[in-house]
Image 1: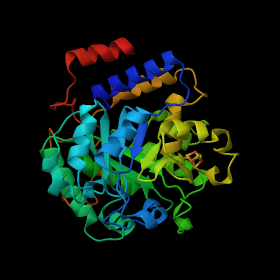
Image 2: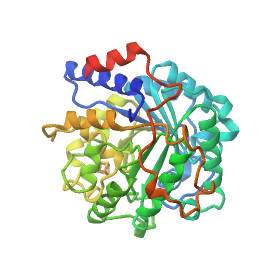
Image 3: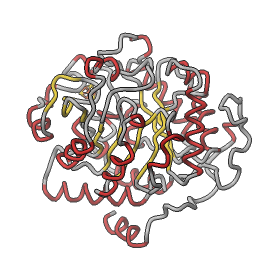
Image 4: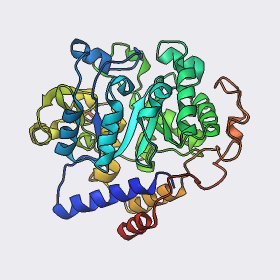
Length: 386
Ligand code: SF4
């Protein structure tokens, strides 16, 4: 399985309810930013620049939970800023999990070891660690030496304690996809459960324009990425990957990944801010959705970012025959757990710098054998819904 069965079951049940009710615009993944403060100043980050004036503001746990209740999304991506410096991150995660939601905690990984004791492993919770390359490249992207090593130590500690861990990589104009293949080969040996990819996109707040790509450049990069990275447990949907490779069109469905932060619901999307709304209903009803997307707003022209298009595979109007089967096959053909059951930290030198034999690592050796196998009733529920 590419994802835990509990996630597939919860998402499928949620979608079925929405379809029965005839709802058109609803969220799949809530992007929750409890704070914008961060211990790093990454080159491509729009948040620390756009929200510079309010960088010290924070949501309370209660405000986060009220917003989650307001939108009802089944998956919460806790991001920021750096959520691991949020004082009550452990309680926030526990409260969200108590509401039967799934969490991706997006982090630079530097504080995982320090705060790991505040979390409990479950199939509903992932540490999603930002890594944009091997040690030298990553430390350059985040503008500080030692970040890659800290993140890797965090990943090792989380895996040793039984947590699910994914990696999250932004592809820039200068990204060498072969290096990303080496990174994935290395993470595979650490037992990392899956990998997310997204093209970098130019935030108005980020002035370094030459790191971002045009649509043509994105297509070239993701062709190469599919060839070299497909053997790993990619958690980027195959339909979104087709879009990134230029093989199909999708419409922006930015309401599928709404962002909530100390200023409110950010409209229209994770990248652009034309307004902040007090309630989710206001965000949906007061955002002029027909004005956004390619060909409608010049700021959207080259945008292929996950927050606008990954949910389009499920929420968009231009579905193709066979898409449902493609998504089902994709879920069933993946494997979490990396290579941890066989060769542990194996053949890579442990610092992510090795010119490893990454390309020969291949698929994980066996089925996921961990503490997270779905209960029989969960399995039944998934197959009933599917
Ligand atoms: S196309 Fe991109 S920038 Fe434009 S609204 Fe959608 S997600 Fe935002």
